[in-house]
Length: 325
Figure (cartoon, rainbow, N blue to C red):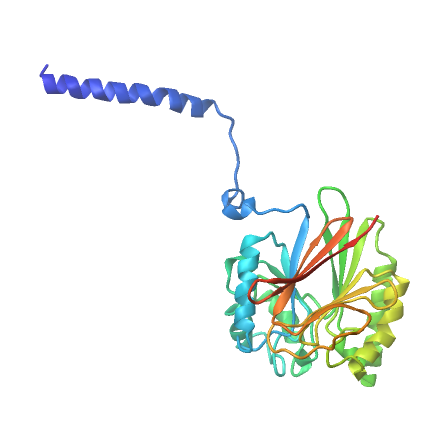
């Protein structure tokens, strides 16, 4: 044998021997099954809350009035924090809603704006007053077009698990615009019966009752004593009190607010997804108000409802926590 062949064969034998031990060790390891989610860097994102979600409203302006900038910050926040879904509190398309499920505004105001990977989650939406300008049912039908758009009806419920135990949060998604019109009293009466039945029959494992509607029942924005606010308060305040609704989440006034009027229910307004309106200061029932572009981020377990208000620069403007024994 030539010397060079001897050296070559000896080297290959040494390499093969060195590989045997590691390969044998791998062969002895137990088989695992990993999904893509298990190995993505997002799997490392966690906090001590089983449920996390964002809320934004009054946004649909083709990216203008800083809608694009708010969307970008929502994407950045979602990339850095755990997030299960996004709630839209209405006025999804200005100025007059959409004419069909094929309306280009779905692309220009939604699909092409909230493009971040972290926002390719489920969105749960309700209607606002501007969405009633043409065909509000088109937004219900769009649920069959877009994977992430979820509006199964004009009003509906969603229960979300709060960890490994059987505890849950109940979201009651309502349609508030018809409340303002006497001509729609039959529709309103039917919806009110449904709201009362839903809340009254909530199971014992429901730890948080969260109602989501477009029009607030209290505000410190321009509509503080407006017909819209007073009418929704007249219709809904007793319902909230009777059924011990923990949170009413809304929009309509284009600002960020946390209010605690007399009674059981906390009012959060997250209507700063695009155009802004001013806020009043010094109102006794206001715990926070800001006329700044942004959104809200909520983290929930069976005992805590944690809220953060975040502006379009990513600054946390306000933080609070509701607690239960």
